[in-house]
Length: 213
Image (cartoon, rainbow, N blue to C red; front, side, top):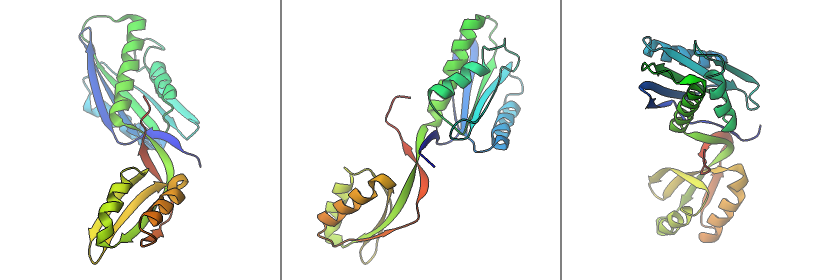
């Protein structure tokens, strides 16, 4: 299984255009049942909304793609939302855009732009991350080495987790598999080998991406 892009957590963002209020919701999902449950939760929350349009993808290759205009003119809501998801290459996600009509018609082009933008800001609020195969490293160093280790780690592609101060300093580093050996080598060089490193089982973990989304 290769790295893939998805969402970190459910979130929402909204904006108003010509008095119509658009609320973009987005959430990570792994099954169709989860996607439909998320959609239903938004529908219940906004029973009085004019429309609750949606788009969701499942599978790393986006093998499942579903979308709906929910009463808007055909091709002005669900499909543009799906195009945003595809452009951002986000899989295993569900986006719902709720609209409260403000009395001014937007036209087909205006609707496409509005739903696309609401979907985009919803995805950004949910935070696009890359799921990569990673490994926790349980490490231990003596107290005199900790300051140097801590400083060095700031320049390494790692996440520092679970630091404990007992008879020595124990800490967990989360690293991508591709970075494991260089990180271990850097720790060994810095401490002249006076570090204990115990790798744990690999798993897929979310890493933030610096690229523009």
